[in-house]
Length: 296
Image (tube, rainbow, N blue to C red):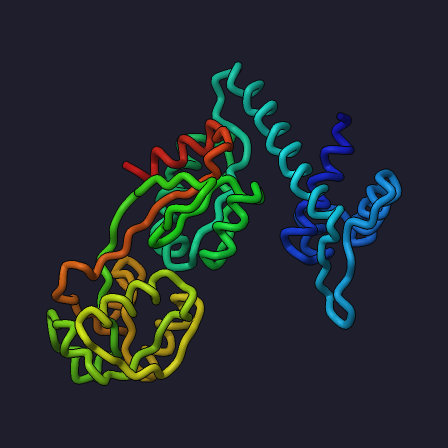
């Protein structure tokens, strides 16, 4: 298959995954018009409509034929990436791009030192890091859109392999003026009735927090829900309530005095972090090296 055809398949897959002509164009350094032309050319070649626009919205959806074409295109791209990787290995050089998707709390506060070290060790390789929700990360790993996912509380699922990398303590955060701010450690039972800023319900850390509180017969007052760690921290800073978050994500705020960080007494207040990848996929050398650094 010609290189141009490979690029066309990549453009199509990027359009499906981003649901945006502009983002697909940016990823591939082409114009939006070029993306549209590539899609039309594919539809004419296979005499099937692959995409349909959602009326009144900018979204695009796959037709039944598009679903098949997308799945097989991902397989072709993965095979081509493996071919490139095999040829690079002959020179002994670690190169290529590793696409990694991660949740905000891990990506912003725990991955940067590892990414920097990777770049120092393997200057010919690149980490393409993107932030997303766990449900989307799992979907993108299974589809082949990303090679690796780094998530909290990774769950076993058919087609996924999990590599544990660490466990973090969960801690209570509150404004420095809060009545609990002066405590060094607190029991779950003492959180009864407190106002809380929570992760949204489908986020694994929220599910784990709910489970632990329920096991101690504790009910807290839900003040607000957000989908990322940074918004939760800002909400706690301005006095909206307390929150339970991974300790590495609040070290800077603890040092600066923006937030009070209180240890939670019970041993179950921990957050497992792991790397996920598609079981059937042969990982690139660069991906394996990145995992090695994560597990050190």
